[in-house]
Image (tube, rainbow, N blue to C red; front, side, top):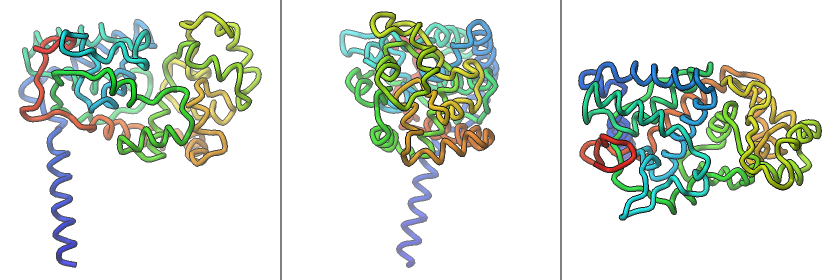
Length: 314
């Protein structure tokens, strides 16, 4: 028993070390006005175009699921590597790079070489959710930026909109998330839009879809052509971060195949019902899951670098 307790103490010591690498006060003396600067820039971008909030949230997600939250998703291709921007889940789809560049240039004026691009993504994701009426959370900071990117990892690690429930559970489990956290994080689809090419097969081939909902979408997403035409992921309140996404799933109005899989007679139905009936629990669980996602394999200490331009290595 003594050895077990010693092992447990050592385990919690390791956990403490791992979580202590990031701190909410990391920049409090080195760049005290950074967070207010990011918040102002995000609010401005989202007020100009509500969809930008979802785009900035998605940038953070697509960064963290590929070798951790290290801003690798922002890197342009070089002679040494092909970046992640041209990966299947990202090409002609990821956006918000210009907002990140604006924030970075403002921070470089305030505190040159101090605030990482990876931390910009984490904070901008939180501020985007708040700007659209969603919950807030304290963002642990201190991530550093990668010096490389991986096209192949981006193609394999980011869950596709065509996945069924078991594949979604596996994809998120591979990153340390349980089924409840999968459902909570999927709730980010209460904002944003998707291209016709990502949901056409569901519109025309699937039975577990509300018929009037499907019909209403078909004009903008024909069986042929219109691949880039957009439809809101949440048809009810597309520009408000709320729990309507789950209400839609219960009504078989999930836009993507992967969305409706969360409520289709499987193991996550009960969690969708819970978030549908209790928006407060969704907000709390979403915020906690976002903090956990932001802790995926960050570069800290002397690893990586602080890029002065988020698009390229120093």
